[in-house]
Image (cartoon, rainbow, N blue to C red; front, side, top):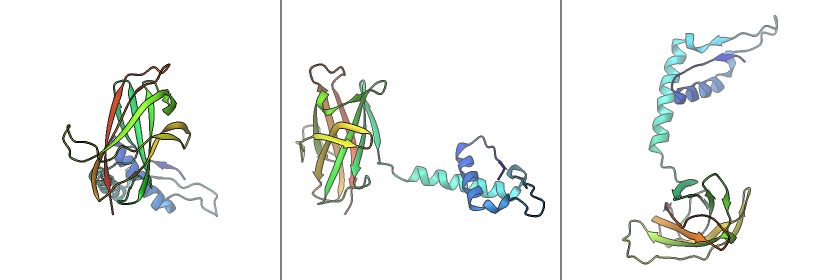
Length: 189
């Protein structure tokens, strides 16, 4: 299949890709002549209309959808990527497994064995002076390709929004600045 698509807006190219897959019959090999038939979509007014509206529809959905999965934060020279199982969708009164990939600037992994890390769970919103609802102990986790990263089991007491605050400082021999990373997590029923 040969499809010629060009747009100055990447989301419109995504719309073209989806439309092209949905209508894959547009370009086919003719069984009698064994020649490839090609359609240039930029010549098709109908395709442009579908492409334009599908692209803008996808863009509006992406903007309107809250994205909490695998949220990245940075503090000083440390970056953190939070993940919560199941499927970044914790449920009230059920155990959620949280883990965080910590990296130094440049991408070097910070292992739990290199960090005096803590996790505190607060209601959201909260005041600076409020005590955390939970301070679950951290343990080393192997997740995906990461080994010895900080993880914890958390049981959120009720539906709502919480703030997870990871903080840490280097253990002897490690080289990164102390950090605090805060993540907002929505808990469902």
